[in-house]
Image 1 (cartoon, rainbow, N blue to C red):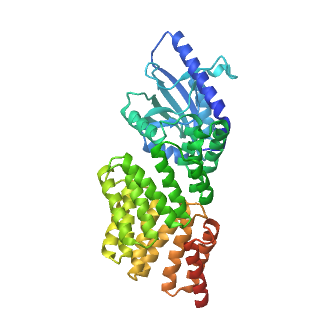
Image 2 (cartoon, helix red, strand yellow):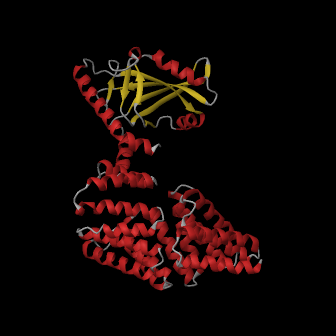
Length: 469
């Protein structure tokens, strides 16, 4: 997805969509027949994409661009045949059945304004969704296939379910550029999201209206690991709304946590919790977030019984309010397991970590960074029990996932490099240990403040191993 192009071309995309809507309305008023009609599209698909499409025969297919089709079969067939001559592509002739009475996506004939007047082009707006009715090879060419499609509509239960899910996950209460910015953050396109919010920031004249924008830029900086900059923006974001204060205190607490200033982090999270306890029901999910964050701080401060107490409060709320395989439950089981581990109760720690991993394997992709957390924690339990081969196996799984899913200078990577180094050191493989400790220090120097306790620990481990070489 070319985000930069979408941002730059957003106005033109919107303008074209509105033009298609206008033509659709005008032509619908003039159209005498409301019968189903057929349009065609010829194109090439990569062999991998074609294989994936065959697996979804009977399912839904979305065209995520403006869809150009023709009412003339031979026009589209020519494009499909040309694509079929490429050995890396499969030529596809889409045969699309359109019921104008059930269409939820605007489409229009553009023959009068098209450069190619003889193609009888019908242009659909973006994200037109079809039901795949059948896929068959065309006679005389194994690299050419005919795919029958039917335009989906609101009566299609699968489409309705999919649309409702997407709508809930794509910030339905936000609009325009703000919604685009939120989507870019969710996609991990932080630099592009910042460009969007900086444009919005310059457009707003009243300082009181800028709180939301400061909050989002703070979130971007936080996700980029730029904690000092994130703190600056979060402190600007204090709005007058009471619960929004809680969110700002929460975010400031997260920044202090990442900077290693745990007393200030604890103060901010306790302020956030106090506001939420006044304003929300006792089983509200936002309360579990604050309990969890306070538990994390106590954990870093070495007060494991208090950490466990807050983790279990968070877990109790999540067990009431979340599905049994929700990824947030996996995170809480991990936290409970880590607290038990530091209290020396390894059997309960292993039990919690295994529950966490089981949940995550059901609900997350194989390269999701949260899986790395579970593999890391299980590896550390084996380390505590002096089972170094099993510890190494789990920690290497964690490292492989983080290398795929995180920026190369993310502080979480330095922690895992350090853990792998610890295992190698205890296996008396000092050369490998030195290599991993060195990586931990290099990443920590890029991503953490110079006085961060984790960075100090990485440097100490590196100095110790140098003396053993």
